[in-house]
Image (cartoon, rainbow, N blue to C red):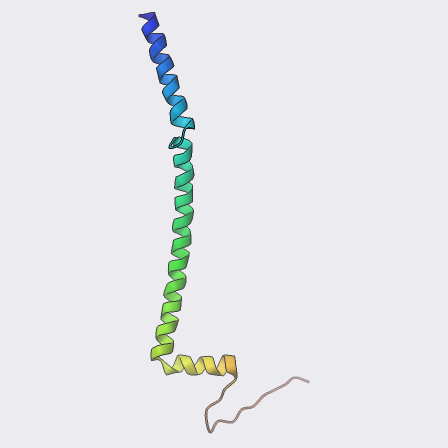
Length: 90
């Protein structure tokens, strides 16, 4: 009976060592979960960026106001018939 308990205890310890240290063990599962969480966070940031870019593309395709605003702010363009005033500080 005592020998059986010792053998079962040894087997249990051997299984615990394999569970904790081998490929696919608990340590690797924890590492993979952490990597998955990081990747999901990165994917969410990219989804938000893509949605913003998609909205901007749709706005540029459909809305002339956005195109006009961009031409004014980035290229310094003005409409025909408008007068441009530039105020400079002394």
